[in-house]
Image (cartoon, rainbow, N blue to C red; front, side, top):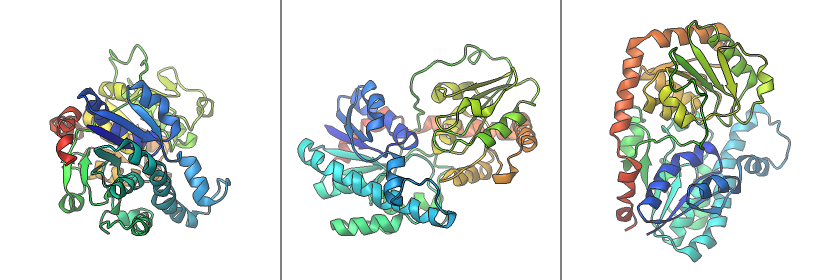
Length: 381
């Protein structure tokens, strides 16, 4: 069977689909993965065919803004985000994928929830589609109005899309969020297929001491898109005061290590770490609340302290707190003292640790990518 996977060109949108795409290839399906050109090397290294489609995030925002000026007035930002994700990127993905679908003629298209353009191209071409999630669904009232743009574009194409959750396009939804944490309204309103969230990371080595560390290991990251040297520095200053712990910091691609300054001897700061390999060794994860890190920490079964910076991160932080899986600090609350205090409490709190182990057990019980890949032919009918 021919299967096209398609995502927006960012780590947080592409990586969650890779475990299922790999599983589908391993089961003998002919798999192509369509995303922006800067992910070609990663896709092809996994033995998957890459097709360049869509724009990278920076180019998409520039097109939506009509300017290379990075400074956008705060009151205009929600509208710009809505136009970027609801119009610019869907239209570009639809345009890029339409001729490819006509030529390659896949049996199934798996599009991630942030990429309705691929799903719309499939619908117009008469190809069955599945929508693949990348995390917990969030309250649309707290997000920029992306849906109306998607509905407008779908109308232009003559495609009927439900006004409730339009990003799904009415397709069945591969849900990588544990049901106990998922938004209950969303679960009630949509046809979901549970899929275990399996962290993916580029191959790479960890510091030798990580696997056999005797002291509690705290991991700090703000992810690949929302790095802030000021927030990282405050968190490092606080976490470095925790006696008897080791701290591993991943600065990410948006923060230079030099911007963090000197760090104590028991703190290791790196540009990047293979997070999927690291998480099972951690005792506490302090992070931005990105969906990949949040779900990965669920699977690792350890407490988390969330320092949300944007997008769905605030909703993820709310869910972590609401389900007793950790704590959060918002905005000006992120001081060295506050980070140290919350982290110290989470490292000692057996109730939170037990809750984290329970969510890890729930994740482990969800159907694996291999199990879901075995059912893909029935979804193509």
